[in-house]
Amino acid sequence: MSPSATTARETLRALAAPRRLVPIVLLATPLLFEQSRYADRRVFVIGASLCVACAVLAPVSWRLLTRDRPTVGGVLAYGVLGAIVVLALSVAAPVALHLRQSFLTAPTSILISLALYLVGGFGLGRDIDLEAKLVAQRLRVESLAREAERAQLLALRANLDPHFLFNTLNAIAEWCRVDGAVAEQAVLRLAEMLRAVLAGGRAEWWPLERELALVDALFELHRMRDPERFTVSRVVDDGCLRVAVPPLLFLPIAENAMKHGPSAGHRGEVRLTITADNGGLHVRLSNPGPYRGPRAGSDGLPTAERRLALAYDGRARLYIAGDGDRTTVELRIPEPPR
Image (cartoon, rainbow, N blue to C red):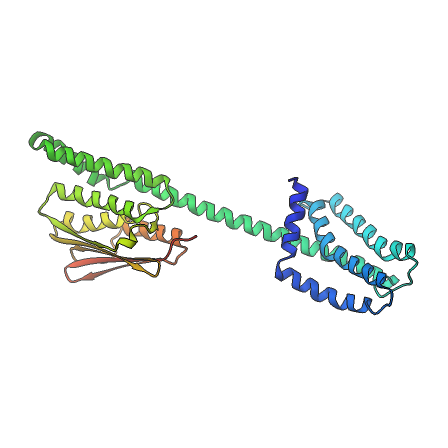
C-alpha cells in the first residue's frame, strides 16, 4: 500500500473514533436538518456532500498535502483545494442542476462552508497528527523501557555476585584434590546456572519452572560449600509452574537471602513458598538471620523492584520484613501482561 493510501486509511480510522465522530455528527445534524426543509432532495444531497467534504475530505487532504510538516506550498495547495471543492458543491453543482439557492448554498453560507472546510480540516488533521505522534512516542518509551530492562538483565548476568562465583570456583579447585565426585557435581551445577542466566538475558518471559530451576541450582551450590549450614524447604503449587515470569526475577532475591543469611553465618532453614493468587503468584522467601533494614549500596532487592515495575507496570508488589531472627521477602505478582 502506498504512503498516501496508508495516510488516508489512518485518517478515516481516526475520524471514526467516537471522540471525533460524535462532535462531527452533532455539528452536521442541524445543518442537514435545515437543508432537508427544501422540497428538492437534490438540495439535501448537496448539503450532505458539503458536510462530508468538511468532515472527511478536508482532514484527509490536509494530512496528505502537509505530511505532518506544513509548508507554504502545502498550505496554499490545501486552501486552493478547499476553495475548489466548496465552490464546486455550493455554486457549480446547483447551477448545473438548475437549483435555486438553499441554506448551505447562499452566498454567506458559502463563506461559512469554506471556513469550516479550511479550519475543520486543519483542526481534525492536526489532532490526528498529534495523536499519531503521541502513540509513536509511547511505543518508543515502551521500547526503551524494554531495552533498559534488557540492559539490567545483562548487567545482572555480568555481575552475578562475583564473590560467590570466585568462592565457588576456589572451592571446586579444592574439591578436585580431595573429592572429585563433589567437584564434578559442583561444576555441573555452576554450568547449569550460568547457562540459565545466559538464556534469561535473551528471553522476555519464561515459565516459573525454569526460574525455580535456576534458584535451586543457586541454593545447591551454596549448600555444596557447606552442606550443614542450611536446609531448603520448598512448597510450590503445581499450577504455578506454568505461569510466565520475567527471567532472573527471583535470582537477586535468592542471592540476597543467601548473602545475608547462611553466607553471613546464620544457620537454619530457607523456606520458599509459592501459591496461586488471582491468576498471579504469591511468593514468600524466608531465610535465617534478622532483618536490619535497607543496606547502603545493596542492589539485590532494588534490582528486583525495578524489574517488577518494568514488567508489570507498577502492579506488582515486593515487601521485606523481619520476623525475630529471620528475614522474609514477599512478592505479589499479577497476571502477565497480554
